[in-house]
Length: 246
Image (cartoon, rainbow, N blue to C red; front, side, top):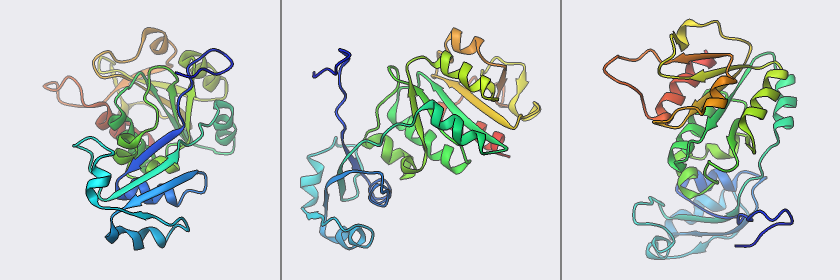
């Protein structure tokens, strides 16, 4: 694997997106660098309506070869560069212009489809940005974009080396940090919601890491039945974001 001047492995910027919503949304995003588009004949006109890039018409089996058997590509394959990440400072600057906003932080949520589903919910509930760790989070890929149903083009993403340090910077910028913890005493619908909130969610099973949890101003849980210990992280994120956005 190639390395950059710091000696760290370089991650390829090439990406292949699939699925109608993911591909059409990426084509409509001026920040995307598009390399080529493959599609079946019946999808060509839909692409031409939103993009000047001429698609390559291929048989469905040619697109099938690009992906695993469970990838529902719907006759679309887009070769493009990954979106550039935002910096934490850019997000803090964006927040300064708002009276009320919220940010979502994921601590070691590693499944791309879960992250994609979370991105879809984040856009639906007006989340300002998503913050993840550099090392223990998935890079943007086709599965993530498909699960996000095109919403990956609309949510600023920040990747940081140290989550605890990023949380401290957000607190200094006026954010109240709220950790989601199934063992918390307070439910998310019963605490005074601040104007600027950073919601922190850990991985399924392990939850937040100790240092991240210790940086939270408050821990809350979802008001669910005692028969259910926890929910899928994407489902829990959607409920939490809905409640914070109310």
